[in-house]
Every structure is written in structure tokens, then in C-alpha cells.
Image (cartoon, rainbow, N blue to C red; front, side):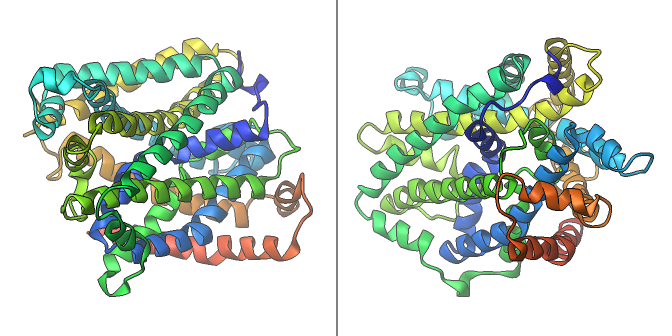
Length: 446
């Protein structure tokens, strides 16, 4: 089936899928450990403010571009600005998603294998500690390849079924389960001795611990965390019906993203403080520190499995959006079948991901610009392509796209609030691009 003949069956299906695209590694892995390293509550408060002032306007913009054109990323810019260079915004998005998926799937494979081995009884049978287990996974080419293959296989199977029967159906199961598992973990974490110390650290603002670097990270995370900048949401919203309010839908996606960040903090920091560990443990917080904490709890292996399972769900739902923008770009003309393009795209991503997968084993000593292939790809995507894509989208929505069409899409399925619209347009014209430039300069100079 050609993706253009497919639509989201409901508003909730679109919101859950969009939230799934946004909620991934950033919300559950990176956000907690950076919050821990940046002083806790103050960082969380700044992140919320930036998400509302920068991330939300950007998300609304991508939704407007996608539904306004009714086309996937590349065709959307072709239709809205024909015979111009703006089409390269869509092409940049497809390239960025391809590169991002090539190393994101490596991490997804780690999570998949790690989750499987963390099923109660598995680690005891293997006789491995959690740090040893994670090191064994990342340093083994065969295990990494297996994880990469299985992770992409799941993505391919889901996307082969299309929007309603594939992505939407998967998210309708995965996202509620993610929230359910999170709530179970939060309840367990809050009942530990000394848990309130972790809650105070996470929710009580302490601005004396905030650095300029932490503020800049919160600024960058505010739009990175919502999957904006690569036109993924342009593609997702191109399947959106006209009876759905874009601002309300974007608001729900942002709320769910912030709520997951809240749940992640409430699940992690009380447990960390309860066992006398430091919150500023860095990137190893999820894969090494937390498993060690869970292993000391009654039924800890069960709770660890729940946590890793929800992390796997979040990683998958984000990957769906990355592969979808690639697939939709090559099925837009209706000449190629979705299943064939999906399998071909998945195979190409697998091949492209091999160097990144080997960056922790065979190719660990191979470096370009003092970076492994994994780190270099991450730098190219996160520090260069994503900020460039974000600022181009901000310029496009304000200066190039037809103003009446923008206002029409903004106000469909709801009463246009002139003040809200004016504030959104001002933010997109001034605050968002200036903020992105600040983040971009900081990223490339550090």
C-alpha cells in the first residue's frame, strides 16, 4: 500500500504515535543522567520552560507543514515552495534520519539484548555482573550484530503494515504499557527507605548548581527531545485528517514528553539516593548503576526487567518515525510498494550501521577527527544536521510558507485564538531561531 492512501485512524492514534516518536533515548536515558549531573530540580524546571517556549512551537510548525502539504517530508517542501532550494530541507531530514537510525539502531540492539539477558534468572545463570554484562554486549561484534539485526527486523515488520495497521497499532499497545510500567516503577521507587531525598533532589530547584553548560543543554534538549528538526513530524502529520486540532495535538505530545521525563526522574533518583549512590553517575546510570540498585531490592530483577522493557518500547517507537521518513520518501510516487521499500531500507540501514556497531570492538582504534565512527556519526547528526534542519524549518514556516495556509492549518478543528497564534508566530520568528543559533554555536565550538 502506498503511504499516501493511509491515514491515522484517530486523533489519539496520531498523538500516541507522535509521542512515541519523541519519547526515546533522550527522555529515558540521557535526560535523567544529565539532570543528575546538572543539579536536579533547577535543570528540570528550565527544561520544562524551554520545551514550552521552543519545542512546542517547533512541533506545531512541523505539523502545519506536513498536513498543509499532505505530503511526506521531501514532497511537502516541493509542493509548498515549488522550484526552489527549500526542497533540500526535506532531503536533509531524510539524510539525517538515515544517519541517526544507523547508530540509533546499534543502541537499540544493545537495549534489546540487555533486556533479554536481564529477564529474572538469566544473569544469575550467566554468572555475570551488570557492568561486565554491558561491556560484554558492546564489545562483542557477533552480539552487537545480532542486536542490530533484531532491532531493525522489528522496525521493518511494523512499518511494512503501514500507518494504521503498523505504526499506529504498535504505538497503541506500546505507549500505554510504557506508562503502566513507569507508574509501577515509580510506586516501588517511592516506597524505598530514603526515597524522599531523591524526590527533593529532582523536584526542588537549586539554582546555585546550574551552570551555563547545563542551561545550554536544557535549551538544546527542549527541541531535540520532541523529534523536531528532521521533518519526521512533517511526515507523521501528512497522514493527519483535517478534523484534528494541531495546537491541541502538539500540546498533548509535549505534555506526555514532560510527563515521561517526570516519571523517569521519580523512578530513578529515589532509588539512587536510597542506596547511597551519587546522582551524577553520567551515561552509565541506566545500564550499570540502576541494574546494580535494582539487584539489591526485593524482586529487583523483575523491576529491572520492567524498566528495560519500557526503555526498549520507547527506543522502538522513536525508531519507527526515523524509518518512516525514509520509507515514505521512496513510496511517495506510488510506483513502489511499501513492504518492498521497507525491507530494502532496513537492509541498507543495517549495512550502514555496521561500522558504528564495530566502534566498540574491531574498529575501536579506528578514528576520524579523533572520534570513532559511532561518535563521529552522532556528532554529525546531533551537532550539525539537526540544528541546521531546525533553523531552516523555523525560517520556512515564517518567511516562505503561505501565511493564510499557515493560519488555516493552525485554526482547523478549533477556534483560532488570535493571541495564541500571534505568540506562536513571534516565538517562531525570533526566540526559536535565535535559541537554535546559540545552541548550534555552542555545539560546534565545544
